[in-house]
Image 1 (tube, chains in turn brown, orange):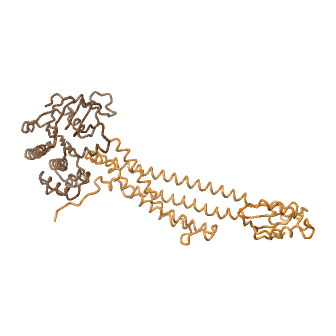
Image 2 (cartoon, rainbow over the protein chains, first blue to last red):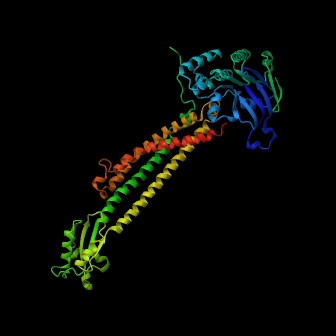
Image 3 (tube, one colour):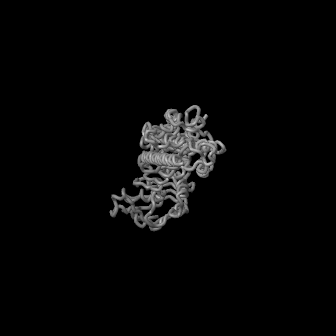
Length: 226
Length: 299
């Protein structure tokens, strides 16, 4: 479950102090039940990525209350926040793969951070890499992969540990139609298994093809919530 | 057989971010300086202990009118005092200085032939005090036998040597503290440089759920290894220099005070292997503090 109550976010960047544009989110309130699916849509710069950052605990709100997976984010210790992050899978807009690691090691990273055993890691990582069609690219480093392949690795890393909450920021941006559809099949399959999903996208075609409740954001304000 | 890729444990890329050259070289230099400072402190303490013992035990007894009869009028004052000293169990090595030696002793002040001045020269006896208690009662006892007899001890010199030793050890301690602080600063700068190089990586693994303990522990482990290796190299490089300095100082030290192989105080041979351990501890602690402080900037 994800719940926002009158959440405000202001970036504390010195160069932007006093600038109204520094206020990224204003009075956001919504609730996604456990196992729910939400599209997060809105124009570029509307605040979609900022909202997602609050969900995956990469930012602290200026004010308001955020509950993630039944935990009030403001009241947990740093250690518990780290443990909560392990239950959240994130697909970043810019992939954020580690350049020094192979595709296999990038995907295995969340499981290794969670101290899973290598046998289980091997089984899960090879399965998910097969699923995203990159089982032959285990040893390739990110700079040896195309943009689409990197995005698939980033997606595999987000879902490999079977997160309770999946947050994806433009996950189909670098994928062709076939790969985008395979990804949406994977995401909806995870959702059916109980994972709560939030996907930010510009791709209205995708939204139309995979109907689900929407959160619409414009100029940092939620204008429509289903 | 499974086609499992080799596991990459260094997912922070610290082998590249915390290189194996600059930090160990700087720590080696610190370790080298620390070894010299420790050697200075220990050698000065060893030598001072010997010199203090020698100076404090030295006795010089001046007997005025040495050929005049003593209080009992049975023998000369000089012989009477000498016999009394020989009879004392806590006095050893009594020797009457010859007139030639006495003349040589006072010639800087009275010239080469003080007899020309018509001044009466005292008889002088050198001896060694072999008791732990101070020789306070010696002068009154001898004065009864030969009025005007003076007893001088090396206590003043011993106290000066003690003060010199204390100041040398304080200097060495100050150098060690400065070396430790510089080593900590070097480690902190290297750690911050590594953090800056791996900012994106750390931010990502933090977002994936890495604990502060994990990230700080990985940095600290790498820094500890580099600091230990650097300090060990510095200590080994210091050995020949210390052996050379030890050889120079050997004539001033007693045979029991030096090590047979390197002419070094035995305490130093035990302290040197401790340098890499101390450097590793400084590295570990500084890296932990630096990384944890930096991680506080992340949510």
